[in-house]
Image (tube, rainbow, N blue to C red; front, side, top):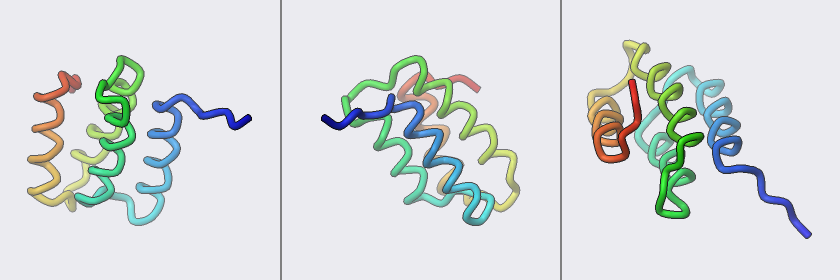
Length: 83
């Protein structure tokens, strides 16, 4: 029997790997993290909390591309993820 980790833990763990790579998030990495949250078609409160932290950290980086900034804003609006 395989135990699946809570999705928000999986998102946080993968975000650590993403940021440790080069300190920022690219579009494919962001889409991957969002995909983890959306596997069950719903982003729950824990996932929103974790994603909000990821978004804040990403947006604080001046190297973040305009495309990724727009995608983050779209995700915030679509899924009601706080700032």
